Length: 433
Figure (tube, rainbow, N blue to C red):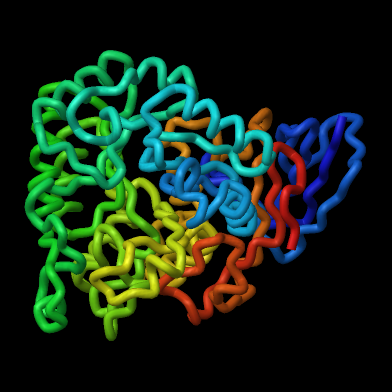
């Protein structure tokens, strides 16, 4: 029996409404008590968290681990190490690997590989259609048995609306969640920047906001017909958020997330064609970015994710239009969430919850609720997945400071707050700085 006592830390556990100085007692990988020690407790290991925040391990709703098939961009080893350095203990990975996650055997292999590394819990999304081609449905029941927590098309929109309707009806029959990134298959196809004055000036082909909103209108109509649960991934526009707000008010079973980069950056951050700012969906206008920040605050946006997409130098160090979209994010998720809390909640009237707790909720308990996984909580009996961090300590984002094999992020050179001091998975210290 292994025991761990984390003492003197500022415990933030949004799922259970805790935000204050509390000790944490862990026995055999589970939370045994909060506040005062359980009867007969003696600690094998004591961790002094004075001056640090003790929170549930982060839950990331979109992290590409690049296995199988793209090991030259990243490996499970490198990316799970990045997750540990970023305090991420549970992550959801999209199905756009090579081969695509459309067969139970591939999902089982990925789960097995991740389990042997004994780091973050990996929760795969299965492909909604075979090969993500948008034509025939996958065996969702078999994929769920193999360990998939939902079904997605990654960046491949389904052109045939009948196929999407059938997929949603099938998913609804079994109570599965469909994860969709709303994008019209035709409008903005091949576009590389937000349609606006800046893209016109730079001569870049555009992706208009209506690519997102037309897709949302379609998805909501299909939801009304099928009653399927849908999670919308990486919303990028004010207009899209307005539609989601209305759909939630109507009572449709919908949740949504935003990529953490989109909380801070706009199309102006492309600068002089910086390929590190080439992402999907593209960074939009300042009005869109401000709408994302407000929607995080009012609860329209359920969670922030890292949208971690490691890209190698050969595919990134190219002219803007030819560079592969994607940015590394696992190790930035915490710092960028804290930055949102600092920037934005300062100017808000005191709404009860403190800004830090709001930010932690968006990357722990709220994200776990969306994914339907048992994580993001430090209740007694819960698995002891914990992130201990110093919210005030500052670090500079550089390729040498990132464990991920993907060294490309628009935040290279920025100084951010929030350093992970320790990541604990199932009661074991998996990373300590």
